[in-house]
Image (tube, rainbow, N blue to C red; front, side, top):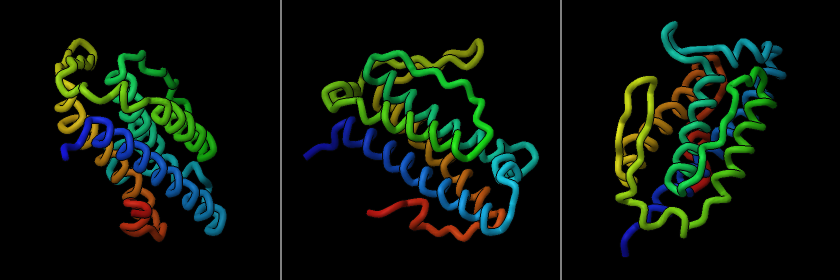
Length: 168
C-alpha cells in the first residue's frame, strides 16, 4: 500500500502544530511559576543571528498554511506577524490548525506533480508537489519547531522528546 500525499502531509502538519501548541502551554505555566516576564521567552534566541521564539512559531504556521493552501489550489491565508504574547501565538496556531484541518484528502491526493512556485523577494523557486512537501515544507517545519523547542529548553524549561513528538 502506498502513502498518499494527504497521509504524508496533513497529519504531520497538524501533529507538529498541536505539539507546538502544547509546548506553548507549558511555556505559559513555566513563565508564571518562575516569575519570568513572558517577553523574555518570546524574544529569546539560541544565537544573536537566529530568529527569536515568536518568529520560529510564526514560520511553522506559515509553512503549514502555505503548504495546505498551495497544494489544494487556494490562496495562502495572510497573517500579519504581529504576535507579541503567548495567547496571540496560541491563537495563530489554532487558526492555522483550523485551516489545515479544512483541507480534504481529495484536495491533496494526486498533487505529487503539481507545480508549486515560491517567491522569495525577486527569486523564484519551483517545485513539484511531492518535492515541495519532502524537500522544503517538512524539513523547514521540523527545523523551526525544533528551534522553538530548543529556545525554551535552553531557557530552563523541562521539556523532553515526548513533548516534541507528542503522543504516538
